[in-house]
Image (cartoon, rainbow, N blue to C red; front, side, top):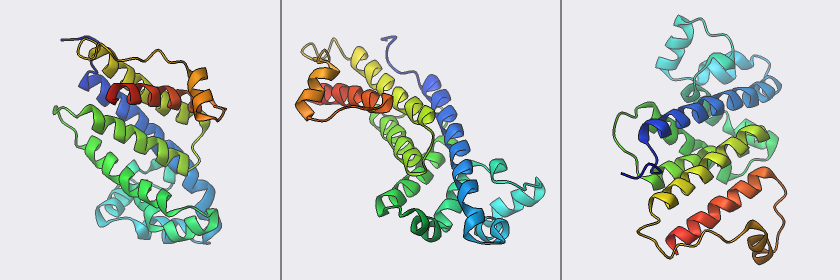
Length: 205
């Protein structure tokens, strides 16, 4: 067994960390918005928007702030207040799609057992986290962390399949690809994303 092949326990740990990071970023995002949307925002925009089970947990644990809510509750709050939030920030329908996908990602990993996940599914979940985080204006450090994780995952996949893909070429540099695509890569996240794109293209072409 190739040691470069992603280990499910390691992947689960990383995904848990990123989902925890997403929770913090979303709580901050909502805290910066909801108080400006309605006076009694805690009850009207949070408590009244939660499911029965989530409201019961809130009452039992005496939760009084968004930072105390878990990711499932926060995503529901965002989804249930989408019209007001998207109107204020001029968010797109595509961003709403990422909210729905984020609910699916959260549920999948919250109930993950010992079963293996296809690499393509893991990558897609990471991509959803990145796009969702971007939609809620997550800080650059977190976005870079997600980008780096995506690039690392793809690199491990490539390394584990080198014998089967003897002709695979991942040596093309970022500078050459920048010239080919005709646009600059301005941020660390851009560069990491382009590296991941190079690996994915070379792996499947």
